[in-house]
Image (cartoon, rainbow, N blue to C red):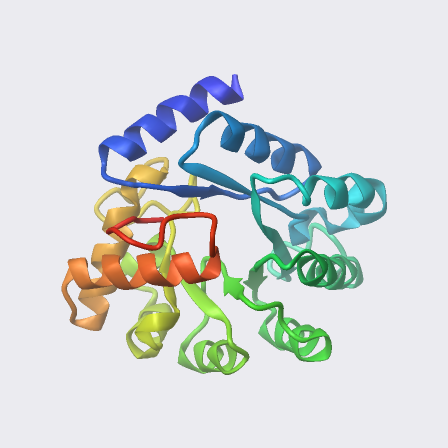
Length: 250
């Protein structure tokens, strides 16, 4: 069932001009699914991670997640980090899982994908303690200019989702306008956060161009320039895993 739905999603993305995608794991089950999808579709790669919501399962799932992370389809570790909005896992459990995944990313020489929601102080504290893997991506960035500057000062990339198209997201839009172009990525965070003009529908990778267009509007730049710059940045984040040339979109 996952394979069939994924095939349709990949086909629509391909038809929309998307050249490659990263399917994100958030626990053992979804990480396993992401790898399987990547095996079936050459334009897809996977991450392996334990989302802050599921951090309480670290002891139960860690050994198998660590083994999965070595699979050739895996291009990053995460989502890892903190979510103090919902607190589905206790903050101490979130921190333990975050630190474990930072260590795993470093051992395997893989990028780290961070989820941080209402937890900037804790996120930056742990990153300063451990030292961020090179490279590190703040997925679905929701901070303002100050948080963006702190992330960039640590050598991190900022990945913007459909939120950047929301007129009410003033701080996120200000961060997108001020951040260095070479540190920007675009994503959908599907099936959530569909960009304007698709807001309220189920999101999918085919809509990533709308995110790029919104980012271009916020920055006063041409969409083609944003597409080229974010493709170059993505190729640096995931070296030797995707083509570095061409107008590919993530």
